[in-house]
Amino acid sequence: MSSERQKMNIVIAGHVDHGKSTVVGRLLADTNSLPEGKLEQVKENCRRNSKPFEYAFLIDALKDEQAQGITIDTARVFFKTAKRHYIILDAPGHIEFLKNMVTGAARAEAALLVIDAQEGVQENSRRHGYMISMLGIRQIAVLVNKMDLINYRQDVYHAIVEEYTAFLKDINVQPRWFIPISAMHGDGIAHPSPRMTWFNGPTVLETLDAFDKEPPRIDKPFRMPVQDVYKFTKFGDSRRIVAGTVESGSLRVGDEVVFYPSGKKSRVKTIEIFNAPPRTETVCGQAAGFTLEEQIYISRGEIAVRSDQKKPCVSSRLRVNLFWLGKDPMLTKKEYLFKLGTCRVPARLEEVLRVIDASDLKATSKNQVERHDVAECVLKLSRAAAFDRAAESEATSRFVIVDNYEIRGGGIVIEPLEDRQAWLRTTVLLRNYKWEKSIIAPEKRAEKYNQKSTLILLTGEKSVDRKAIAKNLEDRLFEDGKIVYFLGIGNVLYGVDADIKGKDNNRHEHIRRLAEVANILLDAGIILIVTAIELTQDDLEIIKTIVPPEKIETVWAGEHVTTDIAYDLRLHQPDNVQESVDLLKSHLQDKGIIFKPW
Image (tube, rainbow, N blue to C red; front, side):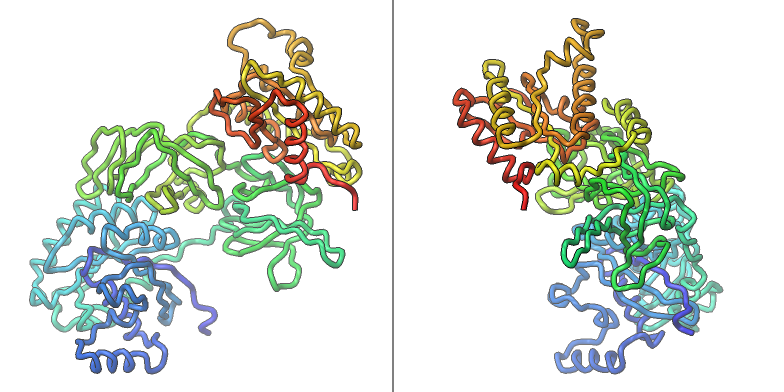
């Protein structure tokens, strides 16, 4: 029977020392959810150490928590009622540890906010309410704890209800109940309190069971952020399994999937579940994998979507609601790491639209985001990412910001903003959808030619003879038996670019056409060498939008780097052509682009 019970995730939060851990400990004890003898063991430990027993000790498993007397991480605890199995995420109350609460709340369907009846509504009480609202958690109950310390006074309870209700109303949150409790003495937790006969509402347990179970996301569009692609080579197993966790929707064998932001597509050949028999379908919540009928290069960070369902947003500019927890402010000139799902991409704060103090909801204008601020701002990513709007999908719209390997902030995506590559991505997606694929797979060409098709972008200072290096590299690779071609920029400029040659402001179109020509040649399996003067990062991003980034090697030739381009190889002495060619060839070998047959 128990296996048929529903499961629900709840986050519990509140100001420091307002009694969150005591509430959870009491829930565990009153529902007989503790391991046998655990309660007695903790009580005995307290007796031996001459320490008063507290129910919070039942979940204080971390050493730092024992030493400091505060919950320093999001602790998961489990208990059950006749209706459900619950996972409660006990979130820290200290401002310094808010990021842990957010990590826990990101998976919660409902929230309990704990307020000390004696101390009343605190700054963190408001912050937690705002954060939980921002994360899209709409089912909330407020527990007015430690009623025993105010002699269970009804007027104090009503004053807290009035004050906190007014605040929550301003952020469009309507609590299900305000429940007066004393977690220490068990009042209002599992049973009504004889000391508060003036309260006719439910107990905490009754409130939890009254929360609505979040409807399964199986009816929403299929979304699976790609965690990894696993390749097998032993025992004749040639599978390439695209793996991840299904965040919403379902996928069946034979469905056509599109990967964003690349726009690549194929059909599902098999569905793979670890240590389970083959199946024909996977649904939301499952860690799963699938193989494709046609092998295409997919990388971590893309989102798999069914082609017959709504597409995700793709952009490198996003309007977001962001909360900042770093000690140093978030600055417009600094680079951070943006993490959404499995996507990891460098990002900058482009513009602060407005800043809201989460404790009083006052909006101000700033050019940076200070610690504990909640800001509506524009983020600029170094390359386009796929995501959904927060109003449409929570799982694929929540993100965190990392600085120096630490989470400093997080938030939700409100909407995509147009960037310079928007029109280009639309064109490329249509091109990919209409692309006539050869019956010869890229892997077969690579095996036949003993090479991987690659675009070598050789750029650098104006004074450097890039063509000499490129042509000598072409000759060396050709003599080695490689399928290689040097594409002179003039071939494109006086050919496919003839209609726009000499016109102003056409650099991006020149780059686009060059990339489209390169993409066709790469599909034939060749190594293509292209030279250009002082390519910028913006130029490279245009090329990467059209040509798969994994097929591009960028080389800078020159003593000085005069643009902002991110290169893969630097030729410091380009005047020595043969040495430069040797370095390039070694680089291609190290990257596995050119190789010998077995």
